[in-house]
Image (cartoon, rainbow, N blue to C red; front, side, top):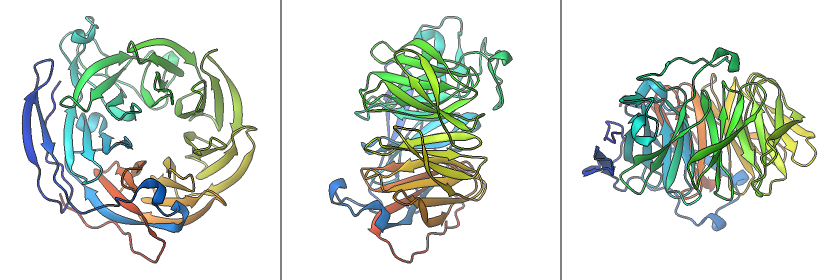
Length: 400
């Protein structure tokens, strides 16, 4: 596995010094040591203004050799962008400075991780990520694998009958040269994944297997797969780590999953192409993006009753929630905008321009910033700690 610096940078920021080392497997590694750039909020989280009273202001654009399908912050000062098969990498950034911390190539020798049937180098296609609670490990799902003994094909509209082979999740240790130090076999075309609140289990939704892989993090092994409806994607887990809620994209529904029993039941009808879910900090409400219905739904988490539906622009994809639970951030893929929604009344209170095809979004609690991944090759960072006021947040021209 190779870790290498890239030409990616924070546009307008200072340069970074490169340092070289060797990974535990002997592979050459190189990462960049970030230097401070334009400041973001250093206000303690508890002292920040309520998020429904603030305005998003763009502070940084990150470019380089990236094609980010998603961006996920750790809550400990790092963000990871997953660049699919178009760039074959996951890129890590310091959320305080916006500078590149490391680029992790997605090629590994699976035989060295206990899979002798796959000798030689295999490439992945990083799509989504989940962080361990302490922010040390990033778990990255790979849409498809390509290399010896892999059939490197998959598609977005698929099912178990297509016979796509299993894929893998990589664990990347951000405290040891950003190396892939563990590989976990899951189902076909894994997409969204999350670590349970107790930190013991990784859940992975397998898009083409129509299953959820349940991974014991103590052993790094899949212990079971739970059958799910068509094309499962987004999910959240209750604080007790026993119940999950899953959005099944090829349905208009979300489902409640009993993780111990390995069963699911219909929970709520929310609209065509249920794609992503987030949950209020007190676990009282679920918020669901329905991509083809072009709306976001607020659902009572106890009863499954739909409390409100908010129209969005064209094809919302992913959503994040502020730590105080008072604001949602939604990216509209074909409208090239992001919208901020006040959760108390589900009204859109701000719309900002993005680059082409925004597809991922994450809130960084360390800095009070919102990170947006644009599939066209840019990450935008918006500060959301200043009082609401008339402000221009159009995306600047960028050529780097």
